[in-house]
Structures are given as C-alpha cells and as structure tokens.
Length: 495
View 1 (tube, rainbow, N blue to C red):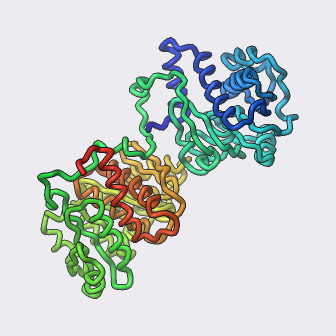
View 2: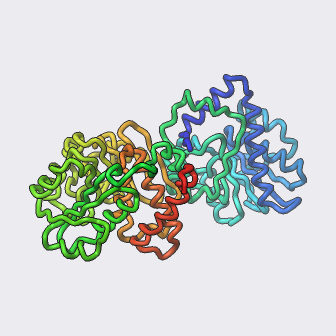
View 3: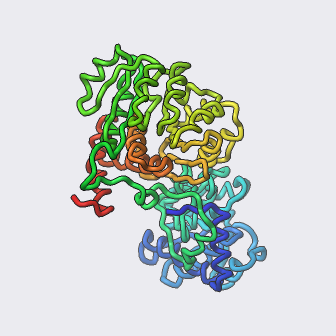
C-alpha cells in the first residue's frame, strides 16, 4: 500500500545496492518484467518497437529488447540521444544488445506493441523538442504501449503531464507504485499498473519511512470498529447532524442516515422548527430535535453523550453557521460544504476553533478548498493535489479529505492516502453528504480522524461500485450493507 515518490524510490534502489545487490541485477529483473508484459500483448513472432531514453529507464528498455528478441519477437530498438552518452548500468545493458540502435527521432511508430522506456518517474522537466514530438507521434499512432515505470512525460510525484505524455495500456513499475500512478491525470495515462518484484527488500521501507499510501483496507483496518457480542448502541457514540432551513434539508438527512448505516449508535438531526416535520416524516431510526440557532445547539450539546457533530450539509453560509461551530468545537467534528465556505479565506480562524476538537475532518471538493484557502498561495500554489491537501491540513490542523476521482486524505502530521476505487458514476448530487455521514459515523465510534476519513472514502467508493451505474446518493447508503459484510468477513468478524 506504500507509495514512493521518485526520491524515495531512488533511496530504495540505493539501499538495496548498498546491501549487496548489484544495480545490473535490479535492471535485468526490471527489463524482464517489462518483456513479460509486452509479450502478453503481442502475437507470436510479432513486432515490438522499444523506445529507449538516455537514463536507467532506457537501460530497462535495452534489457526488454534483448529478452524479447531472444524469444523470437521481431524487435526494433530506437534510442533518443547518442549511444556514446549512456552511462553506468544503462551503458552496460546497451552493450549486451546485439542488434542495431536507430535514432528515435527518425523512427515511425509501428508494430504490434511499443515499449516506452524513454523517461521514468523522476522526470524533472517538461518534454520538448524531439522528445515531445516523439511522444505525440506515438500517441497518434494508436499502437498499444507498455510503459516502463510510468508513461514518459508523467511526473511520478504529482501525476502531472510534463509538456506531453504517452498514453499507455499498461505501466510496469518496480517494488512500489508512485503517487503519479494514482493521481490524475497520471492515472489515466498509466493504464493497468503492474508492480514487479525486482529484488528490493521490503525492509528498506523502515529506513525510508514513507508517508503516502494507497487508500486500501490494509491502511486502516486495524483501527476499524467492529461490533462486539457484548456491545450496545451507547458504545458506538451519539452523533448530531445539524440541519439548515426547510428548503435545504435533504443534505442533512443523507448525512444522518449514512452515519447510522456506518455504525453510529444513535443519530439526532438538530433543525429549525420549520424543518422539524419534514425531517420527522422522512426519518425513522434517526431522532429529530428543534434547534433554532447556536444557542439552541449549545443547549442540546450540554448532554456530553452527544459526542460527534456533522456541520455544513445544507446548513447555510454565514455567521450563524460559524457560531454553531463555536459551540460544537469540543466535539469530534466533520465539516463540509456550507461550513467550509463560511470561512472563505480565513483558514487560520477555522484552525483556532477546531484546535479544541478531539478530532476534526474537513471534506471539501476542489471549489470549496479553493474558497477556504483563498489568498494562501503556500497552499493553493503547491505542486500537486497531494501537496495541496497536505499543506491545507497542516495549516488548519485537521484532517482534510480533498474530494474527486483521486480523493486525497491528508493529516496534519504529513500522512496521506490516495483513493483509486471510486467509479465515475459516484460523481452525483448528494454523494459528498453521504461521505460526510460515513466519516462521522466512524468518528463517533472512536476511530482516529485520519483512519476514519480514509476508511470513509474507501467505503464510499466501494458502495458506488455495488450500487452500479445510474446511482443516486440515497442508494449509496443501502449499498454500504454488502460492503460492510464483505469487510467484516475479511476481518474475521463472526457472521
């Protein structure tokens, strides 16, 4: 589940080589993994074009070319740059290649499969000149591409396109994936990602100490709350979902129902009197209490058993919503939508309030994130979605869920997860309100904020897969049942 940025991956290589594994041995195994992937996509004795660059990625390409040729494939190898400039392991592997080396800028993309070994995850500049022209010709040709490590032109740390980038059907990476494999637009360019074992020992991770992870159950399942035979609803917390006026009640109901489905022991909707009948007639297992303003919410929260508050969905933007946060500041918090916008350009003020919370999660989409951090270039100007989320979490002092098809969860301590399991049909009205509810339900059961937020994002995506195309947000809540059943089975919870 660990994701290594290019510097961390270089460190993993260096530690392995220092431990006695020759760099040539690593490169041989890397090239062999690429050759296997290319062979599976090529007919017997088919034609393979291997495009090599001037660095170690090109060295992997020379290995793949040699092995494919030895298996009877008709291999054409083209090098971007001069062979005489190759150094180290790449030069050694080039010397083992017995065929011709053509100038890549003069080769027309052709064959059954192309191996892209031009540039890897450590690309530090935008492609231009002959390199960009070659990438664009490959993309225009429509021939399936197997990329070495990452498609050339994709930044391994950010997923950004550096000038132009190969569109691959498969990317073969080594030891661990990179953030660029999961962050957009890199994920779209990568195609299927295969992780090959090339002999790097997992023990190197202890020294590297990675702080970025793919959001999968292994990341948080050790902290996931499961029902106990001797448990009861009061063990699982009492959550309050704060509602706005009568015309904006749906978002709060989605959050409240999702929190209950996610395991909160009890859920209460706190709403103005005018919305009371609407909520009461549409909710069965969720309680409803009249709360007109911040003073009313403060009175309700005098009951210390009400441990978690969701504030933002349908709450309204402005001073009253900010005041409600003030009175809820000592509770576990999930803050979304209107609450976030109510602090437009004032993240420091929000930070000062949530500092009193035992655990706070913010769940903005890109627009809400931009509004909250307006005028803070140190956050909005960070080089990637991952870096923006981390900078925002550090400034606010709370876990941030920066939503999207590549949702990033970032904690103030620098830990981050990237989700890759959300189907495209999850982008629908009300889905974010359901996510806030799931996160709140997990928080109410005592799960720590980073783990709760990461688990909520994963559960949200899995529920969308179960519900299928055409889902509406209400269906996500019901789809959580089979997702929970499957997760409990993995965790060994008795059925």
